Length: 373
Image (cartoon, rainbow, N blue to C red; front, side, top):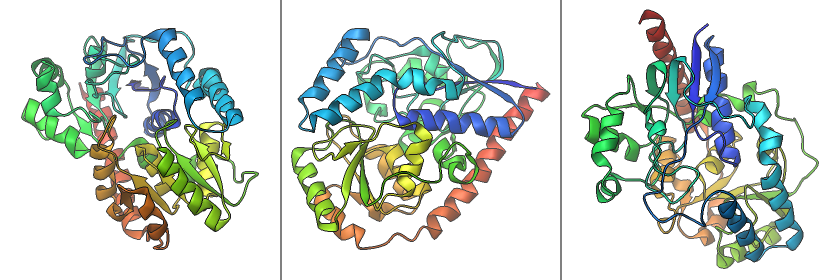
């Protein structure tokens, strides 16, 4: 049995990072290989670090939560969720406290998620050579649906790492990305066009195949507000609250706590999917919040942001790729009007089904190349 390592964002404490890692592991195992997760050493950040490092960064993030305008009890619930995340959910991925650096493998896959997003201030990532395959101990090196996030070619040049990144990328046996920005960077730096593949949360049929997802949740009449804590402004929260009240809905916050939160949902990643399945509608400003809305066929809007830690590159590309560009809003006040127009998912699912086969073909081809080499 081929031994495959996945080097991804599996230790980043959020549902999207977990589900993309779990989904890719399932896809590999369906093809008859053995999958394990590989760890990396975070590098120095190329731009000033966000809130210090290590425990000081964690403490800074938690104290920030207490400053947000949200019900105090829900903020405490969020803090407990973060504190217990690793112990509760790492076992599903087969990982523990002991790190797994440079294991001997037949194939190492870098991705999915923002593994190439090297110009950022997150000290859990930084400028990490291993995220570009440096120092791996595998017979073959590829990526799957990797993303540069909001790192652009201009930023790579600005921070003086363009040549180094190009050198690392040219060592890959095959490169797969999930968005146009990442594809443009790869083509520019290597001279070769990469494969395009869907994020594993779309590529793996969670709703059809994952037995961990419960059929029901003990809640009804709610909408989901999915985003990092405090990302939705007081004005945006006021608009969400007004819409929820007009429809007789509670506002359940998942992933982070917000100012209009009736309840912060602390549950395992599979139950999150169940919560989406039974939600009346979803407002999100994240990539995976959008994907979870799509795989559960919810009525949703995705708020696109260019300022701060922007999401424009990845969200715009995703929605265009699925033919759902009309669900993109810059002004959250447009959400109510959009919710009146029900989503026809037929075109999106035609793309998804085709791309799921494309994913299997790509991964199967790379596994076969390991056997032949």
